[in-house]
Image (cartoon, rainbow, N blue to C red; front, side, top):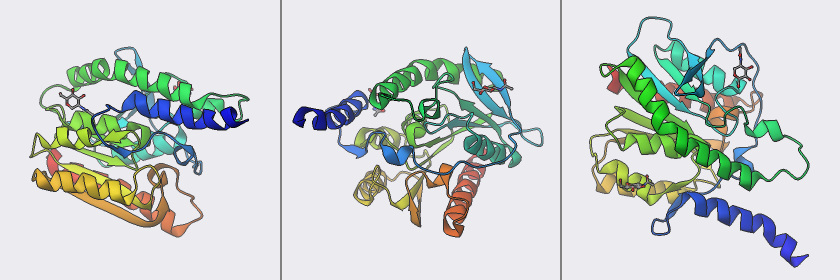
Length: 273
Ligand SMILES: *[C@@H]1O[C@H](CO)[C@@H](O)[C@H](O)[C@H]1NC(C)=O
Ligand SMILES: *[C@@H]1O[C@H](CO)[C@@H](O)[C@H](O)[C@H]1NC(C)=O
């Protein structure tokens, strides 16, 4: 019995070890129940299925010709989940080509809903591995299509947070953003600020077990010490997952979700023109 009780703990520790170098403090914890909780939204997605470097991708087309591109790194529900499709459609409506990489390759978390004996830790490890393997070639293929003149930005939610941050530490994007991340270390921020002009938007909730206030403050301390360009949004009365899976019957939750999406657009507009 005692051993069994330790199994979930062991799984979380293993998941953490898979994404965390030993020498860098954890700022956002591994995928947990908070990353699964939330409401499903309703609506008609307007985007299409495309492929870049053999990786399935959701594509939302801007309403007008544009040379601005948002790379969208989704939560564990994948870019093909209706909530994420509607969010990507919103960004497209604001004038961006939006490309959501499906690093789950058609196997998002909801495919295992209610599955007896589902090993979530193993699924996360597999998904992290797929993401690490597919992202470099996917980004290269996207940038080949839209060309060197396009302005690229990246936004990540939860599982996708680290990828938004990692690409923000390179010359490949002009700005980055992430909301309620999981799987971040201090290194992610140290790496980012080595390019001190590179702007980062942090979208956070007051109550977030995965990215608690102390970690958020630590991240800001690192950014400030490096004189990075950053902006932090903190929403009260919501928790991890609010930007993609808000309860639509809760006025405060809907406001936070919508305002965080507007925040991303305004942040990217500033650096994309
Ligand atoms: C697009 O891909 C998603 C994820 O693989 C799939 O669920 C959906 O049915 C596809 N849609 C079309 C129109 O092929
Ligand atoms: C930080 O940058 C170093 C050097 O490029 C790299 O090896 C490391 O993986 C990066 N860490 C993170 C968390 O991105």
